[in-house]
Amino acid sequence: MSDPRPATARGALAAHGTAGVPFRDLLAVEELAIGEMRRVTVGELDLLLAHLEGGVVATDDRCPHMSAPLSLGRLEGCLVDCPLHAGRFDLCTGETVRMPTTGGLDAGGVYHAPWTPPGREPKAEPPDLKARARALTRTHRLRFYPVRVRGGRIEIAVPR
Image (cartoon, rainbow, N blue to C red):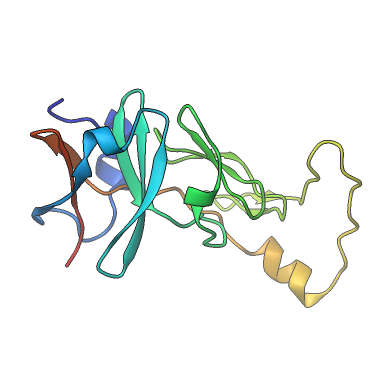
């Protein structure tokens, strides 16, 4: 595998400060089976490594909505679920597939009302400061860190 990242993980969705930085060794590929994800810490960065069918991807281990650890969520194909507000994010494209239950602004600035997961009673949205804050919370696209596999080892480029 010369470049295990999905093609969409490059360019505009690259994490800031990763251009031209050296790669760091993380772990053996065999330690992260296809379909698994894991939290790894490099310096002060907590990262989510996921071994997808198309290769290994790395992003911040923070939901792009309210920063909950995605590594505690569920991975299905390229989709990871946030354990806090049920948002669903595509690790192959960086896009939000399902807005969090709290609603708010998507990456393009479009408002989405709060929603209730199937099988639960809808909650009334009180007209208070907390509700106004949720309505203005923007869910960003995932940002990716450059990943490569060399000599059976997963390496990642992160800012110093």
